[in-house]
Image (cartoon, rainbow, N blue to C red):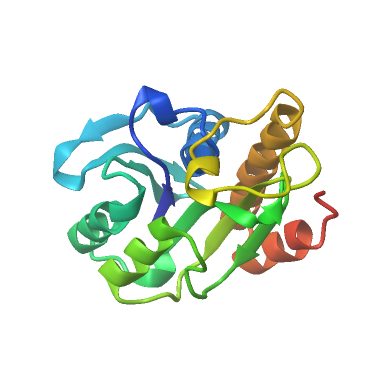
Length: 196
């Protein structure tokens, strides 16, 4: 079983923000995999969709806890299904990657991402795969200097939208590649691409 979680914030005002890139990738996965629509499940504080891929059960999740408390939803699901960290895949936006760039890692720290800090603190482990999608274009299509807290909650500009969409599509492709093969295969293909 795989628990695949896209980090983001609930609420219409955040739906198209940079910080909701993880949520949007989950929605793309549902379409590509032909899963049922997301349904709110209060006991997990999340929107959830379930299905199978290559005979393996897959749970796709959008936490409804707001970004800084994402770990509450993730830990509730992991405890309920008795999953280990290796069963968890997290998808999230990354300020330190160029817009549309993809980076996949098998484990590691949270960096500056508060959602990842919450997940790692809640499950007590950082040894789980993560799919990072670049949201920054400092000095190219956005200003060089940014207040990061407001920047991540802003939407993409007209010039950025095609690149943002490309990044989300590549993220969906990378996750499907990992499901069909393994994380190493996805890393070899997508981390090596010139995604800028």
